[in-house]
Image 1 (cartoon, one colour):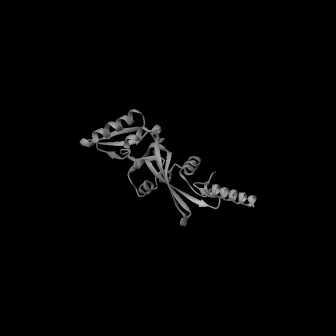
Image 2 (tube, one colour):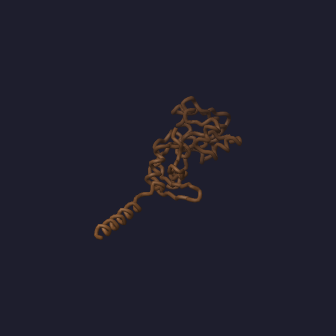
Image 3 (cartoon, helix red, strand yellow):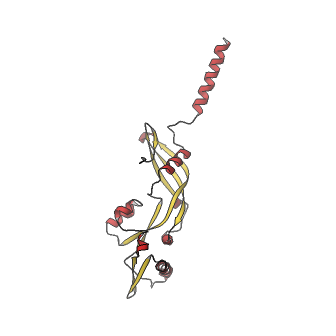
Length: 194
């Protein structure tokens, strides 16, 4: 009789311990961060901004700082400024083309909205201004009905290019990004490894 009670108590304890363990099908902040690190995605982690590349007029007072920034890019050998009357034509040098994004297909890797504008005939060109990486996953929200989860991650700038001045003031909001995960029979997936 004592043996049965001991086995029953041990069974209850073991079940209690096992039920308290992490569910392998549950996505938490730590697991999401590990998955994001295993499969980095350029979309949203490389900041791209438009740059006026046709003609620009620096005569207005609010354009003086921009003119200095463009002249600094020219002195670094990234662009050329050609004056035509009161307007300047901006063109990329070979060195500058390494950070310039020429085609909508290439731009789509970084920003789908800007790629759509480029396809519609926007006169802007686009340049890489900074590269970012995920530093921390702040929150994970599972949506069981859709077999998906969304994680909000905090980003940090790891590299600034000479075109970084084009970015608006970096805010806490602009340094966060949402990532979507999907739930499969094998567990959570962010991307398919190659």
